[in-house]
Image (tube, rainbow, N blue to C red; front, side):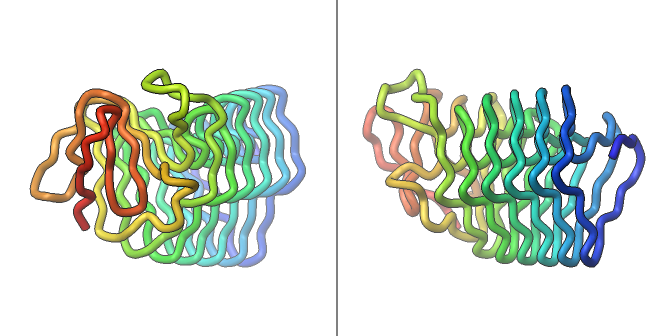
Length: 231
């Protein structure tokens, strides 16, 4: 589906087993396009030679039991490439693969946010850096979603044994805001953040400028200093 406006997938609507030689294997919705998924809708089994195996768009909102799953990209964003991404309810981004970064979701826009709430799941995705999510803007985690069992395949420059499996946030002012836990981190590494990210009002990670590693309840930077995730 090639569009640049608004696309609504509801009930049992599906976009499956499509192929694009460039971006947007299932859906390409332009630089200003919006996709809304609800009900049991799904984007699955699509392939892009470029980025966005499942969908390449501006903003996407997923709710209900909607799924973006088992999509593949030749570049970034195995499941979704989007500026703003919101997951709520029982929505799921799972089993997607990116040759480059962001196996599940790739969003490298500093002016937009990724919001994950309710019982949403980002799981079983694979990419070089940020197996689950690669983000340039704020990631907001609300409630108790599962961001787990994703795989980052490329070791970070901060250490040969450090991998960004579940979340990766890059840049200077980007933040991870938490009002709930990240459950079931892969191994001991749940979140990797590059850049100097200040702590404000006790809601963000307090990090150094070096790549930092987050387990389920603690954060440890490359110097081995334990830090706190506020909830």
